[in-house]
Length: 294
Ligand SMILES: Cc1cc2nc3c(=O)[nH]c(=O)nc-3n(C[C@H](O)[C@H](O)[C@H](O)COP(=O)(O)OP(=O)(O)OC[C@H]3O[C@@H](n4cnc5c(N)ncnc54)[C@H](O)[C@@H]3O)c2cc1C
Image (tube, rainbow, N blue to C red; front, side, top):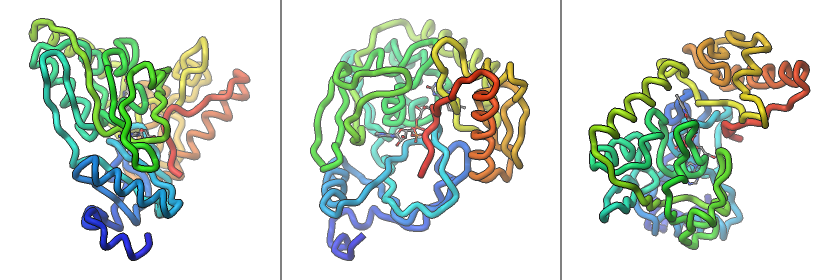
Protein backbone atom coordinates (compact mmCIF):
# COMPACT_ATOMS: atom_id res chain seq x y z
CA UNK A 1 0.00 0.00 0.00
CA UNK A 2 1.14 3.54 -0.65
CA UNK A 3 1.48 5.75 2.45
CA UNK A 4 -1.49 7.91 1.31
CA UNK A 5 -3.84 5.17 2.53
CA UNK A 6 -3.05 6.36 6.06
CA UNK A 7 -5.22 9.40 5.35
CA UNK A 8 -8.23 7.27 4.52
CA UNK A 9 -11.05 7.01 7.09
CA UNK A 10 -10.74 3.21 7.01
CA UNK A 11 -6.96 3.11 7.64
CA UNK A 12 -7.52 1.96 11.25
CA UNK A 13 -9.36 -1.13 9.93
CA UNK A 14 -6.11 -2.57 8.52
CA UNK A 15 -3.92 -4.92 10.56
CA UNK A 16 -0.69 -6.63 9.59
CA UNK A 17 0.87 -9.90 10.70
CA UNK A 18 -2.54 -11.60 11.00
CA UNK A 19 -2.22 -15.38 11.14
CA UNK A 20 -4.57 -16.72 8.51
CA UNK A 21 -4.37 -20.31 9.77
CA UNK A 22 -6.47 -19.22 12.76
CA UNK A 23 -9.11 -17.89 10.40
CA UNK A 24 -9.68 -21.21 8.62
CA UNK A 25 -11.21 -24.50 9.69
CA UNK A 26 -8.22 -26.46 8.31
CA UNK A 27 -5.88 -24.35 10.48
CA UNK A 28 -3.06 -24.08 7.96
CA UNK A 29 -1.60 -21.08 6.15
CA UNK A 30 0.73 -18.12 6.44
CA UNK A 31 0.29 -14.52 7.57
CA UNK A 32 -1.53 -11.61 5.98
CA UNK A 33 0.42 -8.37 5.70
CA UNK A 34 -2.77 -6.36 5.06
CA UNK A 35 -5.94 -7.62 6.76
CA UNK A 36 -8.90 -5.30 6.25
CA UNK A 37 -12.07 -5.48 8.35
CA UNK A 38 -14.57 -2.86 7.19
CA UNK A 39 -17.32 -1.71 9.53
CA UNK A 40 -19.68 -0.79 6.70
CA UNK A 41 -20.32 -1.45 3.01
CA UNK A 42 -19.29 2.16 2.36
CA UNK A 43 -15.83 1.54 3.84
CA UNK A 44 -15.53 -1.56 1.69
CA UNK A 45 -16.56 0.38 -1.43
CA UNK A 46 -13.99 3.05 -0.75
CA UNK A 47 -11.26 0.47 -0.03
CA UNK A 48 -11.95 -1.47 -3.25
CA UNK A 49 -12.05 1.79 -5.22
CA UNK A 50 -8.66 2.70 -3.74
CA UNK A 51 -7.17 -0.71 -4.60
CA UNK A 52 -8.54 -0.47 -8.15
CA UNK A 53 -6.87 2.92 -8.55
CA UNK A 54 -3.57 1.29 -7.48
CA UNK A 55 -4.12 -1.73 -9.75
CA UNK A 56 -3.91 -4.02 -6.69
CA UNK A 57 -5.41 -7.50 -6.43
CA UNK A 58 -7.23 -8.51 -3.24
CA UNK A 59 -8.83 -11.52 -1.58
CA UNK A 60 -12.05 -12.00 0.36
CA UNK A 61 -12.10 -14.38 3.31
CA UNK A 62 -15.33 -15.66 4.87
CA UNK A 63 -15.26 -18.28 7.61
CA UNK A 64 -12.36 -20.04 5.88
CA UNK A 65 -14.26 -23.34 5.93
CA UNK A 66 -13.73 -24.19 2.25
CA UNK A 67 -10.27 -22.78 1.91
CA UNK A 68 -6.68 -24.02 2.02
CA UNK A 69 -4.14 -21.24 2.46
CA UNK A 70 -0.50 -21.78 1.51
CA UNK A 71 2.38 -21.21 3.96
CA UNK A 72 3.87 -18.03 2.46
CA UNK A 73 3.11 -14.49 3.56
CA UNK A 74 0.05 -13.15 1.74
CA UNK A 75 0.71 -9.60 0.54
CA UNK A 76 -2.53 -9.12 -1.36
CA UNK A 77 -4.99 -7.34 0.95
CA UNK A 78 -7.33 -9.84 2.61
CA UNK A 79 -10.85 -8.52 3.30
CA UNK A 80 -12.85 -9.99 6.17
CA UNK A 81 -16.46 -9.01 6.96
CA UNK A 82 -16.47 -10.15 10.60
CA UNK A 83 -17.76 -6.72 11.70
CA UNK A 84 -20.78 -6.93 9.39
CA UNK A 85 -23.25 -9.30 11.07
CA UNK A 86 -26.71 -7.72 11.02
CA UNK A 87 -29.79 -9.88 10.79
CA UNK A 88 -33.43 -8.81 10.55
CA UNK A 89 -36.79 -9.62 9.01
CA UNK A 90 -39.73 -7.96 7.41
CA UNK A 91 -42.41 -10.65 7.40
CA UNK A 92 -41.01 -13.61 5.46
CA UNK A 93 -38.15 -11.54 4.01
CA UNK A 94 -34.89 -11.95 5.91
CA UNK A 95 -32.00 -9.57 5.28
CA UNK A 96 -28.60 -10.57 6.60
CA UNK A 97 -25.09 -9.13 6.36
CA UNK A 98 -22.52 -11.31 4.65
CA UNK A 99 -20.24 -11.67 7.68
CA UNK A 100 -22.97 -13.38 9.71
CA UNK A 101 -22.24 -17.01 10.53
CA UNK A 102 -24.41 -19.34 8.47
CA UNK A 103 -25.32 -21.56 11.48
CA UNK A 104 -26.60 -18.42 13.27
CA UNK A 105 -28.82 -17.51 10.29
CA UNK A 106 -30.13 -21.07 10.06
CA UNK A 107 -31.00 -21.41 13.75
CA UNK A 108 -32.43 -17.87 13.91
CA UNK A 109 -34.74 -18.61 10.95
CA UNK A 110 -35.86 -21.88 12.51
CA UNK A 111 -36.60 -20.21 15.84
CA UNK A 112 -38.75 -17.61 14.02
CA UNK A 113 -40.74 -20.33 12.21
CA UNK A 114 -39.21 -19.38 8.85
CA UNK A 115 -38.66 -22.32 6.51
CA UNK A 116 -36.19 -22.85 3.67
CA UNK A 117 -32.74 -22.70 5.25
CA UNK A 118 -32.99 -25.65 7.66
CA UNK A 119 -31.50 -27.97 4.99
CA UNK A 120 -28.19 -26.14 5.52
CA UNK A 121 -27.96 -27.27 9.15
CA UNK A 122 -24.47 -28.37 10.04
CA UNK A 123 -22.69 -26.33 7.33
CA UNK A 124 -20.14 -23.93 8.84
CA UNK A 125 -18.90 -20.63 7.38
CA UNK A 126 -20.42 -17.22 6.71
CA UNK A 127 -23.43 -16.18 4.67
CA UNK A 128 -21.21 -14.42 2.09
CA UNK A 129 -19.03 -17.49 1.61
CA UNK A 130 -22.11 -19.70 1.45
CA UNK A 131 -23.57 -17.65 -1.41
CA UNK A 132 -20.21 -17.51 -3.22
CA UNK A 133 -19.96 -21.31 -2.97
CA UNK A 134 -23.71 -21.95 -3.43
CA UNK A 135 -23.29 -24.30 -0.51
CA UNK A 136 -25.69 -27.13 0.21
CA UNK A 137 -26.19 -30.75 -0.67
CA UNK A 138 -28.97 -33.30 -0.80
CA UNK A 139 -31.23 -31.13 1.41
CA UNK A 140 -31.06 -28.05 -0.80
CA UNK A 141 -28.76 -25.18 -1.68
CA UNK A 142 -28.53 -21.70 -0.19
CA UNK A 143 -29.66 -20.06 -3.42
CA UNK A 144 -32.96 -22.02 -3.40
CA UNK A 145 -34.63 -19.31 -1.32
CA UNK A 146 -32.31 -16.40 -2.09
CA UNK A 147 -34.07 -13.37 -3.60
CA UNK A 148 -31.31 -10.78 -4.07
CA UNK A 149 -27.75 -9.98 -2.97
CA UNK A 150 -25.88 -6.70 -2.64
CA UNK A 151 -22.44 -7.00 -4.16
CA UNK A 152 -19.58 -4.50 -4.14
CA UNK A 153 -17.84 -4.85 -7.49
CA UNK A 154 -14.03 -4.71 -7.81
CA UNK A 155 -14.07 -0.97 -8.69
CA UNK A 156 -16.18 -0.13 -5.60
CA UNK A 157 -19.60 0.13 -7.26
CA UNK A 158 -22.47 -1.51 -5.35
CA UNK A 159 -25.06 -3.50 -7.33
CA UNK A 160 -28.09 -5.56 -6.46
CA UNK A 161 -28.21 -8.93 -8.22
CA UNK A 162 -31.21 -11.22 -8.35
CA UNK A 163 -30.98 -14.96 -7.88
CA UNK A 164 -31.34 -15.42 -11.65
CA UNK A 165 -28.51 -12.96 -12.33
CA UNK A 166 -26.26 -14.97 -10.00
CA UNK A 167 -26.84 -17.99 -12.26
CA UNK A 168 -26.36 -20.50 -9.44
CA UNK A 169 -24.75 -23.81 -10.40
CA UNK A 170 -23.12 -26.66 -8.48
CA UNK A 171 -21.00 -24.96 -5.76
CA UNK A 172 -20.78 -21.69 -7.66
CA UNK A 173 -22.50 -18.37 -8.33
CA UNK A 174 -21.54 -15.52 -10.63
CA UNK A 175 -20.68 -12.57 -8.36
CA UNK A 176 -18.92 -10.62 -11.16
CA UNK A 177 -15.69 -10.85 -9.15
CA UNK A 178 -17.19 -8.80 -6.32
CA UNK A 179 -17.84 -9.12 -2.59
CA UNK A 180 -21.27 -10.06 -1.22
CA UNK A 181 -22.17 -7.60 1.53
CA UNK A 182 -25.74 -8.62 2.28
CA UNK A 183 -28.41 -11.05 1.16
CA UNK A 184 -32.18 -11.11 1.15
CA UNK A 185 -33.96 -14.45 1.49
CA UNK A 186 -37.66 -15.10 0.93
CA UNK A 187 -38.65 -17.85 3.30
CA UNK A 188 -41.77 -19.89 3.96
CA UNK A 189 -43.65 -20.29 7.23
CA UNK A 190 -43.80 -23.48 9.24
CA UNK A 191 -44.12 -24.41 12.87
CA UNK A 192 -40.92 -24.14 14.85
CA UNK A 193 -41.07 -27.68 16.24
CA UNK A 194 -41.15 -29.41 12.86
CA UNK A 195 -38.35 -27.18 11.54
CA UNK A 196 -36.26 -28.03 14.60
CA UNK A 197 -36.90 -31.74 14.10
CA UNK A 198 -35.86 -31.57 10.44
CA UNK A 199 -32.71 -29.60 11.27
CA UNK A 200 -31.81 -32.11 14.00
CA UNK A 201 -32.22 -35.06 11.62
CA UNK A 202 -30.06 -33.40 8.95
CA UNK A 203 -27.33 -32.47 11.46
CA UNK A 204 -27.38 -36.03 12.85
CA UNK A 205 -27.01 -37.52 9.35
CA UNK A 206 -24.07 -35.19 8.69
CA UNK A 207 -22.32 -36.11 11.87
CA UNK A 208 -22.62 -39.79 10.89
CA UNK A 209 -21.01 -39.21 7.50
CA UNK A 210 -18.58 -36.30 8.07
CA UNK A 211 -15.52 -36.10 10.38
CA UNK A 212 -16.92 -33.13 12.30
CA UNK A 213 -14.68 -33.55 15.33
CA UNK A 214 -11.52 -33.00 13.27
CA UNK A 215 -10.17 -29.96 11.44
CA UNK A 216 -10.97 -30.00 7.76
CA UNK A 217 -12.07 -27.79 4.87
CA UNK A 218 -15.18 -29.74 3.86
CA UNK A 219 -15.19 -31.57 0.53
CA UNK A 220 -11.91 -31.15 -1.29
CA UNK A 221 -12.96 -32.23 -4.79
CA UNK A 222 -16.03 -31.56 -6.91
CA UNK A 223 -18.07 -34.59 -7.86
CA UNK A 224 -17.23 -35.41 -11.46
CA UNK A 225 -20.38 -36.10 -13.50
CA UNK A 226 -21.90 -39.48 -12.69
CA UNK A 227 -19.88 -40.55 -9.66
CA UNK A 228 -19.17 -39.03 -6.25
CA UNK A 229 -15.52 -38.08 -5.70
CA UNK A 230 -15.71 -39.72 -2.25
CA UNK A 231 -16.81 -43.05 -3.78
CA UNK A 232 -13.89 -42.98 -6.26
CA UNK A 233 -11.34 -42.17 -3.54
CA UNK A 234 -12.78 -44.93 -1.37
CA UNK A 235 -12.75 -47.45 -4.25
CA UNK A 236 -9.13 -46.56 -4.98
CA UNK A 237 -8.27 -47.57 -1.40
CA UNK A 238 -7.08 -44.09 -0.46
CA UNK A 239 -9.01 -43.67 2.81
CA UNK A 240 -6.49 -43.19 5.58
CA UNK A 241 -3.65 -42.15 3.22
CA UNK A 242 -1.39 -39.65 4.98
CA UNK A 243 1.26 -37.08 4.19
CA UNK A 244 2.77 -35.96 7.47
CA UNK A 245 -0.13 -35.11 9.75
CA UNK A 246 -2.65 -34.64 6.93
CA UNK A 247 -4.88 -37.65 6.29
CA UNK A 248 -7.65 -38.67 3.89
CA UNK A 249 -10.54 -39.09 6.32
CA UNK A 250 -11.59 -42.66 7.09
CA UNK A 251 -15.14 -41.42 7.63
CA UNK A 252 -15.61 -39.40 4.42
CA UNK A 253 -13.08 -40.00 1.65
CA UNK A 254 -13.56 -36.52 0.14
CA UNK A 255 -12.41 -34.84 3.37
CA UNK A 256 -8.78 -34.30 4.33
CA UNK A 257 -8.33 -33.98 8.05
CA UNK A 258 -5.64 -32.18 9.96
CA UNK A 259 -4.41 -34.37 12.78
CA UNK A 260 -2.53 -31.71 14.72
CA UNK A 261 0.69 -30.18 13.39
CA UNK A 262 -0.13 -30.64 9.69
CA UNK A 263 1.29 -28.00 7.36
CA UNK A 264 -0.28 -26.39 4.31
CA UNK A 265 2.38 -28.12 2.22
CA UNK A 266 1.37 -31.54 3.58
CA UNK A 267 -2.31 -30.93 2.85
CA UNK A 268 -1.55 -29.75 -0.69
CA UNK A 269 0.80 -32.70 -1.31
CA UNK A 270 -1.87 -35.14 -0.15
CA UNK A 271 -4.42 -33.49 -2.43
CA UNK A 272 -2.15 -33.89 -5.44
CA UNK A 273 -1.39 -37.54 -4.57
CA UNK A 274 -5.11 -38.31 -4.44
CA UNK A 275 -5.67 -36.58 -7.79
CA UNK A 276 -2.81 -38.51 -9.39
CA UNK A 277 -4.08 -41.89 -8.11
CA UNK A 278 -7.65 -41.17 -9.27
CA UNK A 279 -6.42 -40.06 -12.65
CA UNK A 280 -4.38 -43.24 -13.08
CA UNK A 281 -7.14 -45.53 -11.89
CA UNK A 282 -10.25 -43.95 -13.43
CA UNK A 283 -8.78 -41.61 -16.08
CA UNK A 284 -10.72 -38.85 -14.37
CA UNK A 285 -9.23 -35.53 -13.42
CA UNK A 286 -10.69 -34.44 -10.10
CA UNK A 287 -11.37 -30.70 -9.95
CA UNK A 288 -11.11 -28.75 -6.73
CA UNK A 289 -14.20 -27.73 -4.80
CA UNK A 290 -12.09 -26.18 -2.06
CA UNK A 291 -10.42 -22.84 -2.86
CA UNK A 292 -6.64 -22.65 -2.59
CA UNK A 293 -4.64 -19.44 -1.93
CA UNK A 294 -2.46 -18.42 -3.65
C1 LIG B 1 -17.02 -29.81 8.55
C2 LIG B 1 -17.44 -29.12 7.28
C3 LIG B 1 -18.63 -29.51 6.66
C4 LIG B 1 -19.03 -28.89 5.47
N1 LIG B 1 -20.19 -29.29 4.85
C5 LIG B 1 -20.57 -28.70 3.70
C6 LIG B 1 -21.77 -29.12 3.04
O1 LIG B 1 -22.50 -29.99 3.50
N2 LIG B 1 -22.11 -28.48 1.88
C7 LIG B 1 -21.33 -27.49 1.33
O2 LIG B 1 -21.68 -26.96 0.27
N3 LIG B 1 -20.19 -27.09 1.93
C8 LIG B 1 -19.79 -27.67 3.10
N4 LIG B 1 -18.63 -27.26 3.70
C9 LIG B 1 -17.79 -26.24 3.06
C10 LIG B 1 -18.06 -24.81 3.55
O3 LIG B 1 -18.57 -24.81 4.85
C11 LIG B 1 -19.01 -24.03 2.64
O4 LIG B 1 -18.54 -24.00 1.31
C12 LIG B 1 -19.18 -22.59 3.14
O5 LIG B 1 -20.28 -22.04 2.49
C13 LIG B 1 -17.96 -21.70 2.91
O6 LIG B 1 -18.21 -20.46 3.57
P1 LIG B 1 -17.01 -19.61 4.18
O7 LIG B 1 -17.58 -18.35 4.69
O8 LIG B 1 -16.26 -20.42 5.17
O9 LIG B 1 -16.17 -19.32 2.88
P2 LIG B 1 -14.56 -19.31 2.75
O10 LIG B 1 -14.05 -20.71 2.94
O11 LIG B 1 -13.98 -18.26 3.59
O12 LIG B 1 -14.42 -18.90 1.23
C14 LIG B 1 -14.87 -19.74 0.20
C15 LIG B 1 -14.88 -18.91 -1.10
O13 LIG B 1 -15.89 -17.91 -0.99
C16 LIG B 1 -15.31 -16.61 -1.19
N5 LIG B 1 -16.03 -15.67 -0.30
C17 LIG B 1 -16.10 -15.70 1.04
N6 LIG B 1 -16.86 -14.68 1.49
C18 LIG B 1 -17.26 -13.99 0.40
C19 LIG B 1 -18.05 -12.81 0.21
N7 LIG B 1 -18.58 -12.11 1.23
N8 LIG B 1 -18.23 -12.36 -1.07
C20 LIG B 1 -17.70 -13.02 -2.12
N9 LIG B 1 -16.95 -14.15 -2.00
C21 LIG B 1 -16.73 -14.62 -0.75
C22 LIG B 1 -13.83 -16.77 -0.83
O14 LIG B 1 -13.03 -15.79 -1.45
C23 LIG B 1 -13.56 -18.18 -1.35
O15 LIG B 1 -13.34 -18.14 -2.75
C24 LIG B 1 -18.21 -27.87 4.90
C25 LIG B 1 -17.03 -27.48 5.54
C26 LIG B 1 -16.63 -28.10 6.70
C27 LIG B 1 -15.37 -27.66 7.38
